Length: 165
Image (cartoon, rainbow, N blue to C red):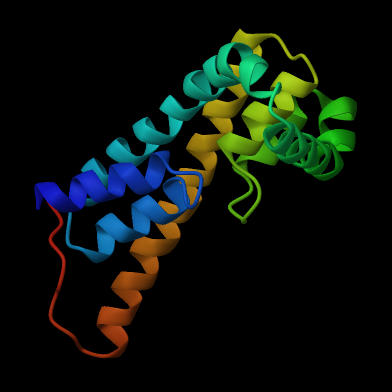
């Protein structure tokens, strides 16, 4: 059980899934639905300060390496292209909307990079990312819970996961 919470946490802090993968993983593995939401949401929120630290401190040194600089410029161009117009036009609200979309390529990693590139004040960017993560997490959580409950009813399966009210 604790291993599944750790894996859910790691998925949620990972750029390969964020809470979009961590929440369903935890629910499918029978973890408490409220605790899974809290752990995965919290892990996903931790990404923003880690990314800002990386972008402000470590990125400067790594940009001296040609292969890293080439990759970083590619990611920066993709971030500006994917979110640029929206964030330039709507600022704080555009960043919330961009982060909250529960689709690949959006989320706190892309939101952190975009807020860094567009020089959005850190407190505002953190708040926008946190609100966006929360909305995205609620969408993923509610959809997964509803789908799992519906599947149990359709196939007359026993309750395979535990819920502590």
